Image 1 (tube, rainbow, N blue to C red):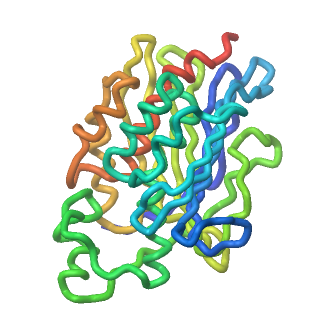
Image 2: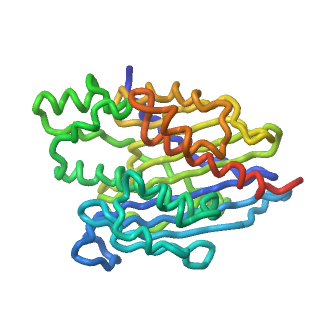
Amino acid sequence: MDLVKDPTTSTPSRVPGSARRASYVDMIWLPAAGFEASPESRLVVRAAARDIATGADGGGTVLDEAALTAWIGDRNQILRLEVDAAGAALDGVELLLGRVAGRGFRAAARDVAGERWAEPVGLLLDDLPVAVLIAGYGQLVAGKVRGAPDHMRDLCSGWRSDGTMIRAIDAGEPFPVPGVAPAPDLSRADDPLAVQPTLPLPLGALRRRRRVDLLPGEPAPVDATFRDTYQTPDGEGVLHEYIVRTTFGSSGTLGDVNAEPRVLPWIECPAAAAHAARVSGALASDLARLVPTALTGLSSCTHLNDLLRSLTCLPRLRDLRPRL
């Protein structure tokens, strides 16, 4: 089995009669220029997302958007959280302060967001725990990671007990650092709405981009992707990238789910892709609950699972999709 290092080279055009959700999450290790933080903060997560409808003439309209900035402490707790949901603060975010951006956070954030969980602000809150996890790659490159917690064994396809990472750790070798693939530019000069606008990424920081397209048709084709990058001295390099394709029917269910790995860190990682089909036929609105139980252990990939979870936005995108 070979390493998968084939990042996509472009963003598809928006299609008349479609709806697109696009987002980014930046993970920035402190100190970094432009960020004010307390001495306890070690990481800043900044993120933004928007929903766009494309009319019959190909023109796009931003229907909803949100932004978030979180300051993370040395135990991954939320020290400070600023959320802008469609130009207004989100009530109740103070209830998330002090919580660890890990197990249990998503349920608490969903309680705070309430009915707004399906909106872009819900995606940004949902992405906080995995953003903190991904940010660890920056510490790994910096040589600040020693070994791995025992609970990581067989947590996913890449962390299998007989895989590249665990074998190296068990042999007493330095923690292996996966390489990155040069990141093609996904922006489109002909369409400023094609991707979520981003800010410059500091050296050593990471970025996750997401895109979910719901196209016209019945059942409606779905094209979804994410890409994780790391800012090297030579520019952004891709660490993870997946594409998921399926359909979304009037009953609210997914069709056949196909996951295509484009960039993954270890040769063992792509084995998880075939198991994404387990959620074929599921209600899109049920994916946040179903994915963590249907895709576990060696059949799973943490990052692919999150992409599948993000498809809970499909009912909302269907409501936003213009009628031609």
